[in-house]
Image (cartoon, rainbow, N blue to C red; front, side):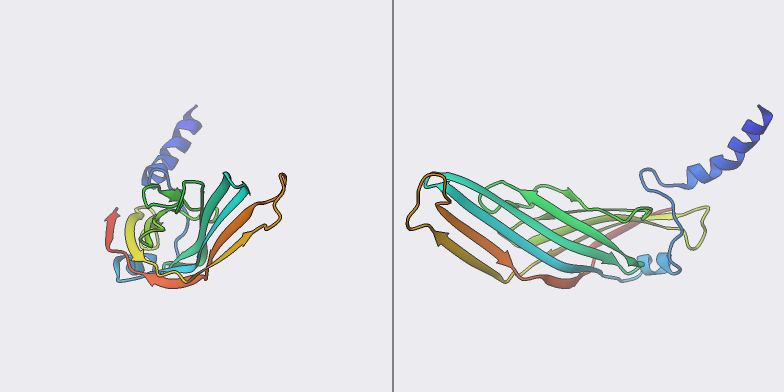
Length: 192
């Protein structure tokens, strides 16, 4: 019993130092100074796709999706994968829903985004932890950024001239060319 108490006493300060909800990991050297400095995330290969399929003149099946990667200069080896899928007609994304991104295992960060197709506004919200200065007292950062994307999109349409029941009546697809650009956070906070 005494050994258990000694073990718990030794581990307790380490558990208390880990920020709630984020896993602890060893930071890249310079993580803290980069995070306190002026930096920009990199949005890589942002794409938007929409599909409208009419199986009959009155029955539509439609959806839209977005996808991109996000990198942080404090963790250049990590790519955060952000994707979303929607069936909310007609533009699918209106900037009012936050979607969680997939971070690499053991990353120690959390990322979410929202996107508005009508305005092109992309919002990024990221939380990350740096422990490169003092692993016993890591610093948790929160960053928020917004950018208006100008998307170069092409639309293709098809209507079946000899439509019969059981066939596709018409299709409309929108595909946008990938966009890569930097995004400087407009707000950052830090908690030690």
